[in-house]
Figure 1 (cartoon, rainbow, N blue to C red):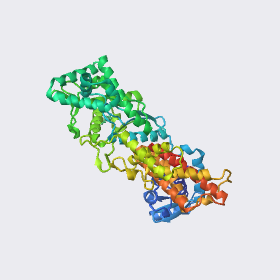
Figure 2: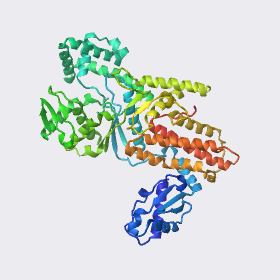
Figure 3: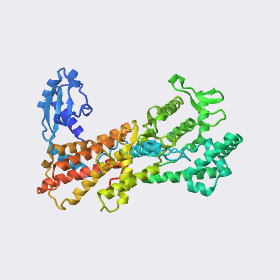
Figure 4: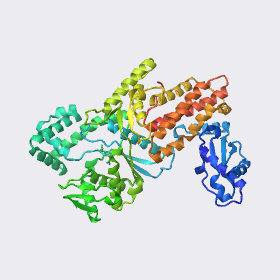
Length: 570
Ligand code: ARG
């Protein structure tokens, strides 16, 4: 039940009754509706200013005439204030209709079908092989995961892609170092740390003995040429890296449809270079090949190094074209930190210059800010690295401490601690507009009272506890019990939830869902403190139980959409 549309229809009916002869009136009145800043001014306000010209009349007079034509008090009551028509829902009917609509198919509240028949590719997480999975990859992973869930919910076919950073001469060096000084057991045990150690040693020794560089390059050449031994070691490095990453993905409940990374495109870059050449876009620059982007105010896009090696950009061009040809996407999103803004601007421009018109409006860089940890920037160079698996483990331990203190008798404490700890981290990451930098603090993220994941989860569990206490048999609900301001405020938030989810997909902004869900939790708690939910009046109780059920499910959906579990008890 879309109240906005109901009010728009009502406004349209009033408009045509008041001005039967008028022409050139706007069709889409819903687009004109506003939400008044103060609920005392109504649920929706219709501004008459834009009608003034077509009707040759001042906005206040239009408002008066339209108000006189209202024939549906069961939908809303109308008041004129200046050039505005303020609509006040009929509270009892609103409660009845909204709750019936939500409870008819509770899990679908917020779902939509504007994406049906459409495909969106999403490139996120995209970790680098032989590098630690650190806090720097947290945002891309959880924003991407949330967007996947939101787009799925709005009917899109989603293709989630982990564009692994698994190509470059460093892998030749790493293999070379492994062959010289490595140990199979140690790599199996030490994983990425051991690979890093080998790589560091390689660079150190190569500084003394430059011939090593050639050996490293030769090993990379062997990977490029498909030499079985080189490929086997390289493949194994990848597996070891992914094995660690998988632990993080499992805890976060993140899944990918494809792990085609940079190496996957190695044999597809030849075509790109040829095509750039044929289209007259390739230029020489000190032996390297570039696409000149000066005319667009950007530095050149590097395509081939002077030794003929491809670059990050080259592989991204190949990947973009491959994704278009394979998935026929309607949108292709790159969820990558803002440091790569220029990279993607150049990428999309080169694709456009190649004649791929879709690059312009279908490819989007969904960028986001930096994450720092308790006031300290996260930089590998300063040696201050917060590893994601350690962070998530810490989160679970801390959550367990809190649960032990607050609910010592809870069953499955470990499980709940996992959901709460991880939820706190994910929620904190998706709390504010993605472009804002995040500073992560434990006491903030795990506070059960503030605007946090645990707070919202706790509200969900509270709804569950109310429902468990409700009598089994209840008469049919009396929705007149839900006409108070607190219930209505909550109902309004529930009714707007679907619009918010749609908007979140449109703007690629999961924080809109986080905020809407938090607002619902807050409104429920306010209601809970000010009203008795279970009381003698069984029909009133039944109505409040309906409200609680709807609220519980919408909170659960909201949390799901940002990638957070909703425990039944906490
Ligand atoms: N691996 C890169 C990094 O960690 C991110 C890759 C993003 N995706 C892309 N298609 N360029 O910085």
